[in-house]
Image: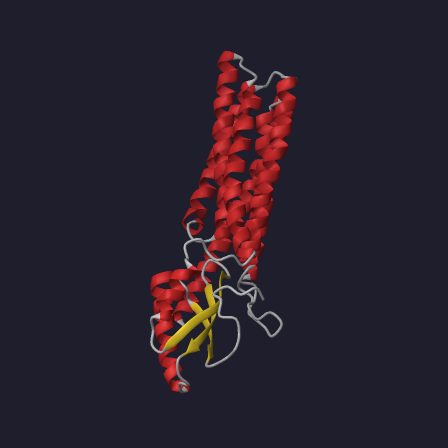
Length: 302
């Protein structure tokens, strides 16, 4: 019971941090749009666009965080445990979409460079660094073990880096009148977004597609379980990740003899210990069989 209470407290803390980050990013987005239009800075407007995508991504993350608190039911037996994975997928996709938009804008500005009011750019980029830096610190801890929070964190972290790049560009434009640095930095930010977004998109897609986690070797699990007496064969294996907290194993097991149910319970406990401690699998569903004629392949095409 204390674990459940602690879990809900942690979810509430994540939700609070997301709300604070949403409000801060709405503020900085408005300021950067106004400043970008006044100064004529593409990198500042691109930073504002990315900040706006941050707001949307944080709202998606917050909504997913709320959904995970909802209980399971007869028509939603897993509840909303995958809501945060879907949020991570959506946010990773938007990172890449925003990056492509920025690349197009940067190329257009390269072809038609324009003078920029660098003083305003410098001050607003400093504001962006402060706001996004604070939001990054709020979400950093949860980003280490939660895809949803990592997706929100990446939006904010890359935006903080973007503000640093805009600041450098503003200083170069102020003192050296190098205006091409504005679209050049925009292009660099966009490429970095694609690099970061692709990895998260790949991870979340693997989970949504029920792929076996990369760290788990199915053949090693089959061999380890097969050494337990009186197991004859392990086949029809499925391993998938439901979310960050749950990895499931489903398998059919042939026995050399027609054992009693109480004996099976003892063997099942050994299997659960083996796969949990050595492979990180915390949900096991085993179908016991004796003398059944079915496919004995480890992976069966259902």
